[in-house]
Amino acid sequence: MVLPLLLPALVSGALVYCVLTIVAAVRYHAVRPPELRVTAPVSILKPLAGVDDGLEENLRSFFEQDYPDFEIWFAVRSRSDPAIAVVDRLQAAYPRIPSQLIVTGEPPYANAKVYSLDRMLAAARHDLLVMADSDIRVSRDMLRTIAAEFQDPKLGLATCPYRAVPGRSFWNTLEAIGLNTEFIGGVLVARMLDGMKFALGPTIAARRATLEGIGGFDAVKDFLAEDFVMGKLAAERGDGVILSSYVIEHRIGAQSLAANLKHRLRWNRSTRRSRPAGYVGQLFTIPLPLALLLWIVQPGWWPLAAATVLLRAVAGWATAGLVLRDPLTARLFWLVPLQDVISFAMWIGGFFGNTILWRGRKYYLRPDGRFEPV
Image (tube, rainbow, N blue to C red; front, side):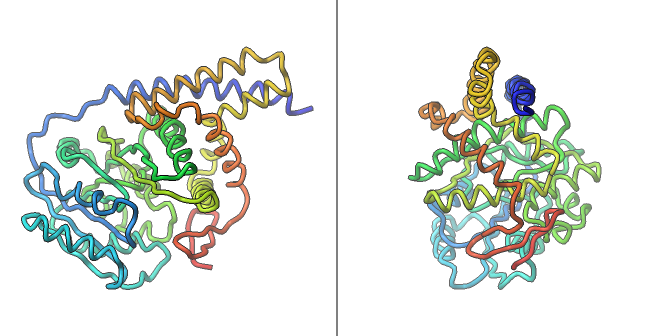
């Protein structure tokens, strides 16, 4: 039997990964942004599509930045987009903040977000750019922290870690717990072992010269995980890429079980094509199902299974508590095992199928991560 021989090795690998996660979280927690000496002007780029839960408060948090020189650009596909009314209200409430809205029309390629960013980039005045999704909420010091980090002339791109905040949905609550205890752990371990050679989509800051150097948005327009590719290309070019010391809030909304599973499956299929080897290794980031299988198949290995459960708990606290300061996970930590089981099932599902559903449309995923409408 292969399974009885393989399981102890897999669980041992998961245990080692938990230790690496704890070390990586402690090392990241020790990072502090430098003192802000120069307030370079910033252009904030916000692609919009409809009205997400909490959209107005999300956007308001960018208008209220404690920073002397910044502008905000918004982009929608059509003049009938209800997000325009939200932008109009905020522009009226904050007349001193320079802000503009662009109606892009239908994108000429699959990735509508990238097309919106490209249109806003062409209109933006400043060389330091902050690209943030519509479901992001920040505190008043976000731009000050980003600007302080970009005082390093070698830095070309920074990507922000995020604390997931769900809406009123049990399934999104589970997803948030997974993001705050599992996903961020993978990011921190990758940062520690190999440096930042990728970026995370919700919020990316970059110099205009870095974007131009990688070929602009034309270089990433055909990829579903354009954020990952953007960071990869910047690192390959030799520009500095960092995981910012600023943690954003990612408001992931509320979904039914079916919608949430489709969303997770899309994410897993995309990740498998963005970094195939890393996706296989993602198994070690979900240790509780492995420990449970080991205990069932080989009860004599229970000390290894128990040690893995304990270290998973410590690793979850290190990421959600120490790094993200997440009150949700602290309150509902007992849901981590259920989330790990669902995550394990979705990881297996990610190996199958080559289509995804995104904003009501079906797309075909190519083996290299590019995608196109079916």
